[in-house]
Length: 133
Image (cartoon, rainbow, N blue to C red; front, side, top):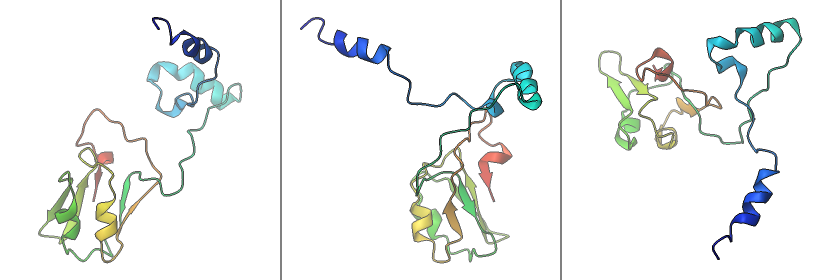
């Protein structure tokens, strides 16, 4: 019983990984040589894994369709949506969002939807790329 996991460990050691290598687009700036090789055609970037159907990625917001009913704010479990009173529109903080899609389901005008974009990492949680207006 002491070494019951050894057969599993040895099987895993010789299998290929299930994940793609991280895309070079998001690599640190120290990889400029590799990016130059890609531009010259000497190397190839690995594309990210395709997202499945109904993937819940970054929220998309159509300002023109929004009627300011505030239902999305009431249903948001993480408090990621803020109402801008002067414009009667919403502001969504993706750093707080749990991507549960409840705001999309309750919206009467379908102005909120989920995209396939999933690369949202940033060092600043209030970066412009992480705020949807």
